[in-house]
Structures are given as C-alpha cells and as structure tokens.
Length: 387
Image (cartoon, rainbow, N blue to C red; front, side):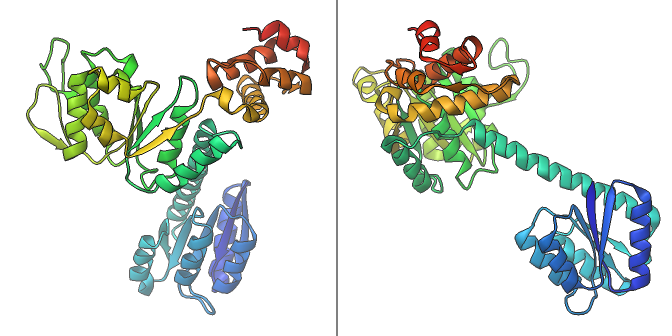
C-alpha cells in the first residue's frame, strides 16, 4: 500500500486532496499535516512513498521542507502545490529535486496522473537500489584472513583514485571480484563496468573487440561498430587475462592509455575516451616480458598499483566462512533448503589441496549440497568431494 502525505495549511484544499486520493484507490493510505514543520516531523518518523507539499506555509515553507528531507530521505518524490504567485518558485523546486508541481486549484486528472507517475518513479528507484545491492552481493569478497584484509584495505585506498591497477593471482582466486569492488567504490561507480576476457577472443578479433571497426574494415564488417573502450567511457574497463593479448593489440592499448584516444579498425579518426583501466592476469608478466611476449612499457603503464590475490591454500582460515557463504547463495539460487556442514566436514575441506582455488571450492560445495545429507557430514565429503 502506497503511503502519501499531504502537507497543506489551507484546510479546505487539504481536505479536497485527501478525499480525492483516498477515493482514487484503496491502495493509497493518505496522511495529512497542516504546516511544514508538522509535515517534516512526520516524514522523519514514517516511511512515505510520496509527499504533496504546499509552498507557502507558516513555521516552515515547502522549499525548506523539500531541502531538509532530501538530505535524509532523498528517494521520496515531492510534488509541490503552488498558487499562481508561486509558479517561479515551484519551477525552482524542480532543480532542488521535486518530482513535479501542480497549481491551485488542482485539476483532478493532472493531480492523479502526477501522483501515479511519481509513485512509479519511486518504485523504479527502489528496484534499482535492490538491484545494486544484488550486484554488490554477487561480487562480495568473503573472508577475514590477513591476506584478504590487506586487499580490502588497499581497495579502500586505491578505488577513489584514477590509478591503474594490475591484479595478479592463480586462476579461480577471485581477481574479478577485486576489479568489481575497485569500480563500485570509485567515483566512476555510476558509469559502466565493461569486462573483456582477452584469452577468450581470437587474436585476429581482439583489436576490433577493444577498439571497434568501421564498415568494410574486414570481410564480416557489415556496419560500423563501437569497441569496448568506447562502451566504457566515463567508467571502467576490466581487461581480464591481459597476458594473453597479442603484441599488436598491446601496442594499441598502450596508445589508448597514453593519449586517451582510440581508433576503430579501418579508420584513421581518433575517438577520445575517458576510461579507467583495471587489468588482471594469472601469468608472470615479467617472465613474459623477458621472453618477448609482453611489452614492458605497457606493463609499467598498467602496474601503477599491484594487487596480488592469494591462492585458497594460502588463506585456509577463510574456508569455513566461504563454505557458509556458498551454501546460502546456492540454496537461494536453486530455491532449495539450506543445509549445514558438520564441524568435521568443514575441517576436512580445510585440509584439501585446492588447486582450482575458490572456483573449485564453490563447485564442491554445490555438489555436497545436492548429494549430501541434511547436515553434510565428514563421510559425505569423503564420498563426494574426492579429488
């Protein structure tokens, strides 16, 4: 049920607004306040989905109410109620965050349409917040070991800067989690986060994928196409497995970093891009440089900040928490009952050699949830988690 507050010092208009809204839908719960101060206090105590607020009122005017509430509950849409002499002020309230305004005396259709639109907008804002929380949960970094604590601390320091970051570590350790947290905690978090798996793209297509192409640049180029760098403008591009990138593509990435410009394949036109680059690899890039497979100048451009993600075998203290995290997450995804793990089962899993790291542990937890007993036992681990 949508909760609406009407703040209006003229009793006759207030009663009309309350009556119209109450009769419009049985899903509207309408409260009222006779001045701005009372309205502001009610909003602070209650969770309203919409506020209709007069502009000229005693004790606290509508503009003051709007400014005060937007600081503490910015998601609540305000519809301002204006007299003929308040129209300029009403328009100015839009700049302060009001959703819309209606004039006195209120037109019935205009009022109801504005209320519906404002409530729809509120619902979208809430859905977007929930979605962002789900995205954050998807990339949650689980663990309290010293190694993970150091990485989290480094992310807090580095994320707000524009410094490029190179993330290293074995396959399956969660390098992409570090990249996502760097983006989410950065000033670019409202911009796009574009991921490119350099190992999954054929060498002959990597330049087109990164920088785009123009029509006719090669046989299958039927139309112009923007690349990942353009798509990541004002955001972050995550170059995963950059150690597998071809030398020719490396040269173009280096130019993009140096000049903040790219050229589509088949074009000589520069396109300006504003992108933060985060890269990751499971390879020893210094060895790759010595053997001529990776450019040293690109390495130094990328590795302004180095983050090394440890193997799971080096953070065994985190395994109990990771098991609990994965068990809950998998049960939610599959809609099944949550199973617990006995202490002996957890201890046995802590002793395993996790060559596949966290990715392997998640797979084993999923297997045990499917095949194990209601409480996953040590015997279940021996039977179903064998290497």
